[in-house]
Length: 88
Image (cartoon, rainbow, N blue to C red; front, side, top):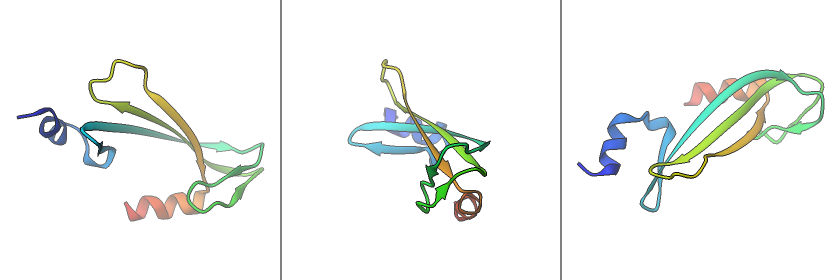
């Protein structure tokens, strides 16, 4: 069993995808936060400002990579976040 087949059976498929021959594993953590400054919703491009919304921290990690993982932060409006979760 090669490395790609091993990771297909040991990692959740929702967070696993391939770029070239490298397996990319992303881990997303959502927290509900108050947006004091204006931000754009990643799903709908609506402005989120002075309201509660979902704040995401996503970690990208390549399999077999010894470098530190990359992080991405973005916002989801509550309504779009709920619809996005139901579509998954």
